[in-house]
Length: 408
Ligand code: C5P
Image 1: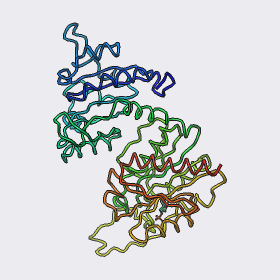
Image 2 (image 1 turned 180 degrees about the vertical axis):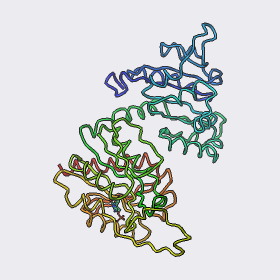
Image 3 (image 1 turned 90 degrees about the vertical axis):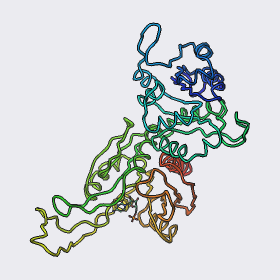
Image 4 (image 1 turned 45 degrees about the vertical axis):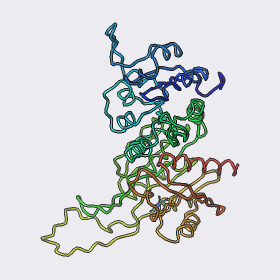
């Protein structure tokens, strides 16, 4: 760590909670400052039992914040200002109690309130006894936080304060700094690139109140959009109706409803795109005719829908792909997975296909996790473990970036 660290000049809020590993937070603050970061410490009331605010304020050169206002001067400590100030918000150590509060938004102290106001990237370094660490409620809370975009800096296994041995030791301060540095230095790999992403389901109208749809929530496509934007890309996200929101300002959302609308919007953005990622679950069929009025059971005791094929957006764009454009698609399969995915990649002129199997628990529609196998045009396939959709998005973009680097 030198003055050229990617943390140089960054604003870091260091949240300290009441665990024995709090003594390591002093070293963490020191390393962050050595890396060039400006550090503001927030302590929970019980953290003060483990390490003194005086130690932390001396190391950081800033008064430590614990309460909503100063008992001496009555000065208000604005969690909103702190949240806006922070490029990075790292809670180390993060106790089971604070993880639970963060995952459910229980804003009863300055640390959790500031967390809820933070727009910057959040990391937590859990530290607790092994049985607390292994408890299903801790796993649940960590999974919720991860789905909310928080990065977990895993606890290590070893001897614990209780003298028991197991997983629960806070990650070493140098490793925590490395995790932040790795995140801070990743922001430019897609700078200057335009990325087109399709996401979510499409809806095909039967009549003014009914439609044919599917279970896609758009979470995977939105996670890819956030990751691409975080790497510096300009993103056009052509999205079917979903309840997730895009957060990064470099994402332009084009909201559409049907496959035909999605094709039109995707075609408009395609020529300008360096990378196109087709993550939408497009309905294969649409009613041949949409009834102009609500179909009534009284008048239509038996109703037969005639369906017509929808355009294949990936195949249409793939057919007009120019040199230097990279296209990836998804394949959700139930059997003969790899062969079907490879065939799909070829038919649609894709450079990469991301395979999900509905046979894998935690993969596919609606979940916050996914398990994928990424296949490239040379027939190479790599299996990944079950991860959060944000992490899968990073894997997909890493794979795309390394393919592009090999092509050029
Ligand atoms: O043919 P299948 O639907 O299995 O192919 C999945 C891939 O093709 C996904 O990348 C999906 O976004 C894309 N697709 C499309 N337009 C369609 C059907 C699928 O872009 N009409």
